[in-house]
Length: 282
Image (cartoon, rainbow, N blue to C red; front, side, top):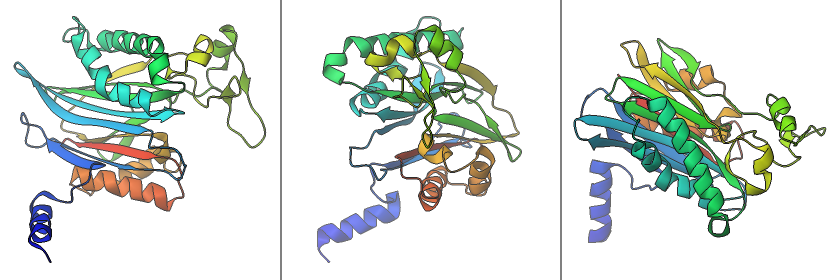
């Protein structure tokens, strides 16, 4: 074994495996709070279309935990753009600290407008999103468009914090915009026979019939709150909310929990890209 290989082995022993699709971090405000993430590319022949944000950020006297899953369709440029820009747009909103939910809604709209204006550079397709902002370890603000989902576990029980925006449940709104929802045998319902979600960023060719308005809600982090999970639909297609909670409730390391969930989804024959963030509160 060469000196370089020995050094790499020593580094792995101290820091863990060097993997750009896996990572973890800790809050500076509370030693109890940590996060971990893991991504696995699906069996499709296109490039990876899932992108993750998972970090703690200090802003003056405040600490923000910023967590997100962006799941692209026919595009990796748009979720990559969201990874770089959506939280920046949210934090730039003047009302962020006082009216966080309204700031998130406004930033989602602005970001979608920016994406549509850059369609020549970003290309066709679009992306779902689920975002979570942990404010001073006490309040979690979750927003989503599409079918990437967030749940929280309190006393061993799963609670969904987002809404799966499915064409079948938003048929009336889609038809009111002049679109239609297909329902062919052997296929899922699709907007205009194309897209399997009713809300998304981008998708310029479908935008007249497609919404990018997020569902937004807040959750108080109390002593009963154990952990939260954000993931793309590659996980939720094969596991229920409670199955996800039960699978990782005894795994204390957040990154190990996220990795376990992606591995379990693969074992259950999920063929989609799978990305997962776990945030532990105790």
